[in-house]
Structure formats: structure tokens, C-alpha cells
Image 1 (cartoon, each protein chain N blue to C red):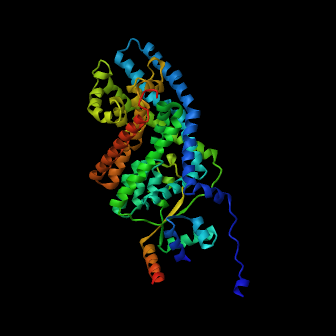
Image 2: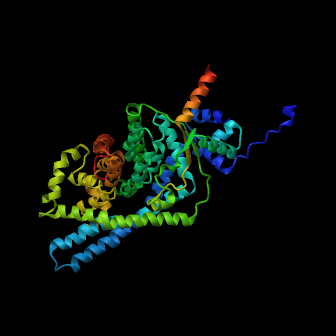
Image 3: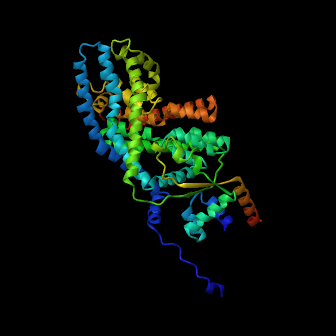
Length: 92
Length: 412
């Protein structure tokens, strides 16, 4: 299931969690849980922390436009390697 | 037996968010909705706030200028002119745009609070993806709509040095809220009733240039590295008046502080350079400096005053408005900035000026952060050269196309 999620994420360009949930036939809550699992295992990385400091300590928080921003994950190198292996196995 | 025993639960019902997202994140409808949202933003700004701005300018600033001239009759002429034109004519005119900014920030805050801006970012990402430039640079570019400074800092999330550099080079091409505010302020001045159409066209052009430059740099520097992205969009919700009020107040206060410090100081410097040694602005140091740049301005249909206003936006984007007001002598004879500009600048020149402003070198704060993040003067200067080239090429092209289309005459 986790590998399928990784494959889906890479095939869709930018994928929404709701799209992934729909494609996997699971609820959005379970899809989020799967993403958390993949993040814990190092295959995905959460990049919302892209702002160098947390919102509460950010000097720009007063003027920030994007407090209500989307959560984002990207594939890590470990995730890419796993995906490449999976593709090779399914291809071979 | 297993098939009979297993009951597959039905997936959750399609909620309000999912129904709205069918349109909001659709590749085509989503893009049209995004332009619609920008359209509403600029329409509300010009319909609600422009009359209030014009009233403040003609009924308040112009009267205080007249009063200052009569009350300070015994003081030296330069001091009267400093107060009437430098302080009131520069920073004072910028302050009259307060109603425009309040409406602009309120609309932006409503879009953000409902959760729509996150969808706008998703739609823009798809658009960038279609053009081949995509990756971790998305988040910094997204933040750039608020302010380019944190956007440059956010490029730290990109591990690859070439990817980080590419993102830092692209960030200044994202129209930040200060540039969007200048656009909202100046489009009614240059184009009157057609302001909305021109504002939308300029935002569209800006995004197109961002995509094109991104694609070209991506194919050369970044070598087309793509990265998978997963995004969880927030749910739509009713905006909280308290959060909107807080956002508007904070941004308005930041603007007032900027008007009282940076904009006032630059206004005074522009006034001093435009007053001395005199007599008259045409014999000033500023005119001499402006004439050096005049050949460059001539390509874009701009006289020396407009090219000086463009370069003053390097300190802070709002300075473009203050410098135009000082150099075109807004407030003389009770005429507002819009009337004064309309008699001396053609819509083609106005369009070229706004195109150049939208794509021009970022403000000094952004450049300082760029230097800190790249630790290289070479790359910081490369960014300046890239922006200058893009801005001046686009403005020149826009000016000549607009002239061909019949926007070359004053009041056209």
C-alpha cells in the first residue's frame, strides 16, 4: 500500500491527499496516516517547515499571507531509491 | 466466501470542500477562477477605495498644501517647498492610498482565511508543472506572493545548490503584495475606468514571464530535475472577522511605518535632488541624473521623471508612487495625481512603466537577503542583471505594441 502511494504521488505531478485517498480507495484520514508513516520511515519529507522559524516566533507573522497554507510532502532520496527498485522489479 | 464476508465500507460522502475543489483546482476552471479572484480584488479596490483616495488627495492633502504655503509665508521658499512638495506631495500622497490598501488587504485576507489562496497556489503549481519548472522551489515561490524576503529565505529547504540558486533567482519575479499594491494604486491613475483590465493583464504577463524564465533556467541550470509533491489542502471555512481585522491592521500599520520612515526619507531625498541647485526642476541634480538615464527611458516611452521613479522603487516599491507625485507636482492648482499624470503621460507609457515596475529589480531588503543566502555578490548581481534585462525588454516590447494598438496619445 505504501509503495503504491509513493508510485501514485510521483505519477500525478503534484498530488492532493484527497486524490491519493480516492485512487487507493481509502478514506482521506487513512491516506494522511500513510503519509505520516512514510515520513517517519524517511521516504517522504514534510516541507511546510520551509519557513525557517515556526509561525509563533516568526518576525513576519503579522504580515504573513499564508498562515492557512497547505501541508506539503516531497519524496526523499530514500523514497526515490525505493521507487526505482519497485519499478525495476515490476518492469523486470 | 471471502467476497461475501467482506463488506467494503463506502467512501465518505462528497463534502462541500470536495465539491468546490472540483472547480477551484481544475486545470482550466481553476486558472480562470484564479484570474477571477484577482479581478474581484482589483475591482473592489478601484470601486470602493479609489473615490476615497481621490477625496483625501484633493480635499485634505491639497488643502493642507495651500494652508502650508500661506502659513509659512515668512519662511524661506525652499522650506515651504520642502513641506508642500517633499513631505505632503511625496509621503503625503502615498498616505492617501490608505483606503485602497485597506480594501486590498481585506480582500486578500478573506481569500486567505477561506482557504482559497492554498488552492490558488496548487493551481499555479500545476501551471508551472505544465511548463516544465517544478519542484521544491514551489513553496518559496508561493511565499513570494506575500513578501519576497521570506521567500528567498525559504529556498533553504532545497538541498541541491543549483536548485536553491534557481529558486532564489526566480523569487523576485513573483509579484509581492507591495508590487500588487502599487499596481492597485497606479492602474486607476494611468487607465481610469479600464484599470481592472490592465491590472489583470499585467498580473497575467508577470506570471507568464515567471513561467518562461523558470522554464529556460530550469532547462539550463536545474537540468529539469522534477520532484514529486503531495499536498494536503486546508478545508474551506467561513473567514473569521477577528483574523481578517488583525491581518488588515498589521499590514496597514507596517505600511504607515514604512510611509513615515523609508518612503518619507526617499521623498525628501528626491525632493532635495529635484530642488537644488535650481531654479526649477529641469535644472536640478535629479534632472541631470535623469537625463543620463533618459536614452534608456526613451526606449520605453518614459521621460527622465518616470525612469527616476522606476529606479526609486529599488528602495521600497511604494516609492515609485511618491516619486511620481513629487516629480509631476501633484497637488499644484488642486489637481490630483491622476489628472496631472493623465495630461503628461500616455497610456502606452503608463503600461510600460507598470510592466517595468512589476518585473524590476526587487527592493533592497530582498537583495540583502539574497546576498546573505547565496553568500555571493556574483549571483546577487546576476539576479539584478537578469531582472533589469527582463524588465526593460518586456517594458520596451509592451510600449511599442501598445503604441501600435493606438494607446500612444495622451488621454487615449
